Length: 489
Ligand code: GLU
Image (tube, rainbow, N blue to C red; front, side, top):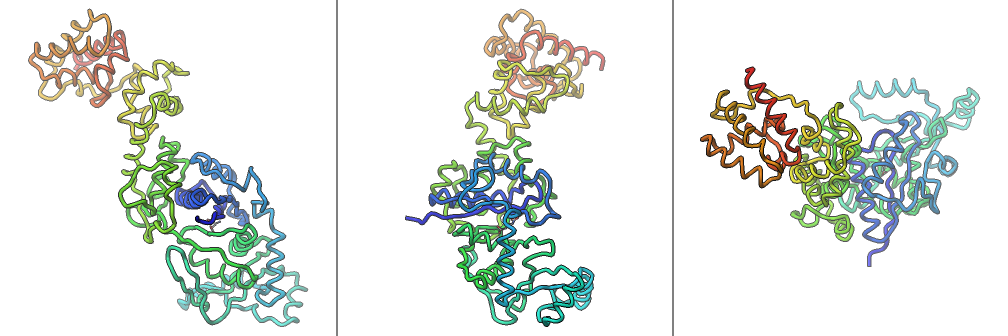
């Protein structure tokens, strides 16, 4: 029996939810669900300057969209709250004061100007950046003097000057940092807010987190956290740093690679099922070959051991392929229901809304097989909704035909179609196939010209089904219009 894990996702509300962060949330959620443990959502909102209006809502929105439900946190509460760090300031202050009192931290009065000059000097001398410990050993009098000047200090941690800090990462193994490379980092800022390091350690401990699962970019913070746990007499959790999601150029996935917010993928018409499956397989795998896995299969099979040690690439083609698989697996009704909002948003403005549900229901089966995203559905089907087709007249003249033969073909088609009472697949096929032979054309040529005339494009859903849904009146009108265009050419 595995012990139930208590894990947390700890986003900072600084922007829309990045797919990399969401994947981190997903690994945490999967471990919680796999072990029958708890998934805690904690909002790390202590960086007042970086806080973005609406960011919290969009993070919650992204998590909910993927079904990453949390057992404790905003909206649901829990025994270890509050779950907003901005509401826990007292705890951090107490921890910082305790560390000062026991000699593991100190007040620093350095002005921003002094720190700036120091930094510039370090750059000039090509030294590693970091606080020069100016205030580490101030005497009681020196401190009193600065207090008298009314300077509000920050609290810095007294990092041991020698020795090493090590921890065992469940993915990267033993990680060792030389203490001499860690500067005396700030714990409490002059505005009374804690830094990430202090708040993170205080809360992971107070919230009884068993595993900290986070991206590799935080690994260099972990020795500081270990030092803090030790100084506070607390037991550190297990650490699991996972590689980052990379773009095709193997750089960290960022805006210049395309969409990075999970909500953008929703807007582009990817299904939550797809995103869940796809993201969980970036850097984690069942067996190096299984691609399509349901949420339940992922929960049942998830294990930290199978998270890879190297960064994994966000493969857009694979995402499109997978979304197609999920779209095809939906029932017709479900597909239509999910495509509806994309149609309402994506169709040209002249299309009358609300759309006729029955009509939409007849169109959708024609594209469910071919759409890669729900947003694409509007592009693939707009000619069903609008008669304002705009196409290059030349498209009506199919390979190895000329204007005259195209006119002849469409005129003949009109004559044959006019008496057809019911525009169903079989009746259309019964008149149009023999017509190609009669005209001495390949079916591809005749059908190609007709396809452009009725849809305005060379690639469209199967012709007879398309004509059948469009109906006789619309089809004949469009063929007539095409003839007009050809004659004027
Ligand atoms: N607030 C940090 C973030 O924005 C949390 C990192 C961690 O999980 O410790 O990702």
